[in-house]
Length: 374
Image (cartoon, rainbow, N blue to C red; front, top):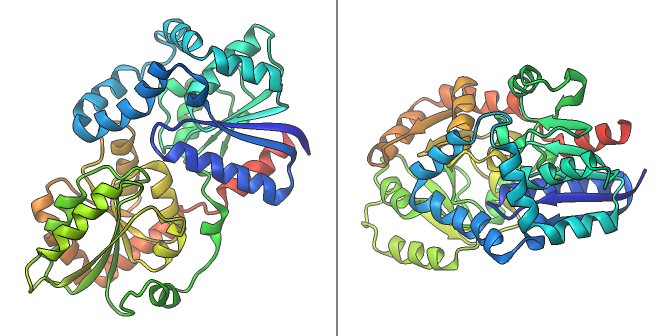
C-alpha cells in the first residue's frame, strides 16, 4: 500500500479527467493507498496558460480542426524542442512545482503529458523522489508524452508498446493495460432493462451519438443527417455540459418532418454513460480515447464522423483496422451508411464481437495492480 498517491490530469478535453477518475476509483476499490489526491494540473498554472490549454483547445478543435491537426503533427518529433517547451511550462507552472514538492507523493500517476514532463525535470534535479507512472490516453503515442525519468508507461495497444520500445523505452517499463475507464463499465447490464429505464423502445436499433463531455462537434448537422434514415431507429443525443446546445437540439427536433423514422432523444451531461451504452447497439461520433474505450467495453460498433486530425484520426485508423468501426467523412451520406449497416445484421454483429475482443474493461484495475507490484 502506498502512503500518498498523486493523480494528475488536465482539463484539456474531458478524456484526461475521466481517465484520472477511473484510476482513483480503482485505487479506492483495491485499497491501494492511504491518501489519494486527484488534481487538475492546470489549476496550478497561470491564467493565460490555463486558458491556452483548456478554452483555446476546445475553440481550436471545434472551429479550426485542421490547424489543430497541423500543430499535432508539427510537435510529433521525439525530443525536438524539449528544453524550450519545458522552460515555458516551468515558468507558467511554478505553483504546481511548489505544490508537488510540498506534498512529496510516493507515487504519481499522470494521465496528461504536461505534469509528467515537469516531474521528470524535478527528478533530474533531485528535487523530487516520487515514482512516476504515465498513462497514455489515446491509442497512439505522441512525442509530447516522452520524458526521461519515469517508472512505467501504460498504453492501449501492443502496437503502441512496440512504438515506445523503438523510441528507446525498455520493454519491461511498458504495460499494455488498455486506457483506464471507470470500473463500472466492466459490469454487465441487461440491454432490455436499460432501455426500459430510459424510456426507450425495446426493439428498435439504438444509436448513441456523443458530443463528448464538453459538448463540441457537429451534433446539429448529425441530427439533420440521421433524420433521413429509412430504417426505424432511436438515437440518444448526448450534449454534455453544453446546455445551450441541448436547447438548440430540442428546438431542431420539433422542426423535423412528420415522416421522420428516427426518434431523437437529447440529454445533457450524464453520469450514467455506461447504462446508456448498455442500452445501445452503436456509438456515433468522434473517436476520443476514453469514449472509444468505454464503447469497446460495452461491445458497441462505432460510426466515426469527421475525426479531428491528430490523435482521433489515429484512433480511427486502429478501429477500422480491427473491424470495429465504419467511417463517414461526408455527413450527407450518414443515413445511407447507417442504413447499409442495419441492412446487414451479420456485419453489425461481427463489428460488435470485434469490439468485445479489443475491449479492456478492467484496465483501471489492472493498472493499479501493476503499480502495486512495481
